[in-house]
Amino acid sequence: MQSLNSSVLIISKMLLFAEKPQNLPASYGLVVFYAVALLLATTFLSTVGKYYEIFQIATAQITIEAGVVWILLRILGRAARWKQTITALFGTDCLIHALMYLPVALVSSNVRTNPDGPFWVGITAIFFGIWSLAVSVLIIKESLEVSGIKAFFVSFGLAILTSFIVIFIFGSESFAVRA
Image (cartoon, rainbow, N blue to C red; front, side, top):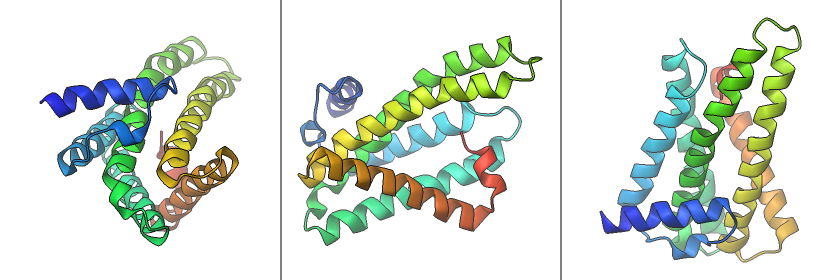
């Protein structure tokens, strides 16, 4: 329980760019906990009524991201950092997803009848997407010990690769279902 409490604090500080992934406890238990938390946050804090479809897509996305990060770290000779890296990525994504829910739901409910409603919901969600990418860059930068620009391209490439694989598996309509 102590490692879970300390990991939540460390991950919360990572959202503010005040902590590094190497300070997380290296634990398969934490990897599983944050993977399940991300899966649940993605499934239940998303589009209402499509929970089963979102659950399937989120499961594939989490599994693919974990695998790609493992392969990348393995190729670069840093496989021992996988538990902390993936815990940091899943944990920060989970918290950002949870923090995103209320503002997006609020904007969505206020612009429901407006023809420009989806635009405003998208603008609101983009802020959280940029924040998530920035946090991912920090995590990748520390895990791979590379420059910020290299970490940006790796993080962006990871997101694109994961999205392409999910679209390949589920079809292009999966992009509309994902949160």
